[in-house]
Length: 113
Image (cartoon, rainbow, N blue to C red; front, side):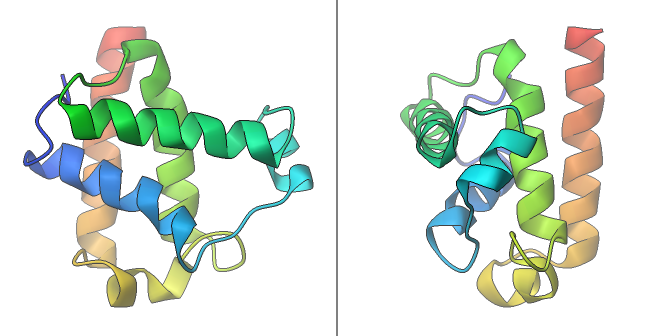
């Protein structure tokens, strides 16, 4: 389950999580809206998810919904995420990104109920 960094879904998720180190930004207010204590906790979790995917260890299934939420904002939100610049800063089109998000959500629903 999302353990191979070269797998398309894993690669997409890594890309979306890493976008936050580039054009996307966040704040304590934003982090609290996502149920994190603050911006530091948000980025700590984001880095943990990246490290787990990069290492091939994979994500704990309970972390998948959080990773999807962070990725969805990176893809779709023009203020906090890459938004309309998404295809410019990644190799994924908007259509591909949405298809990947749907596939990840299906995996999450199948495993998390």
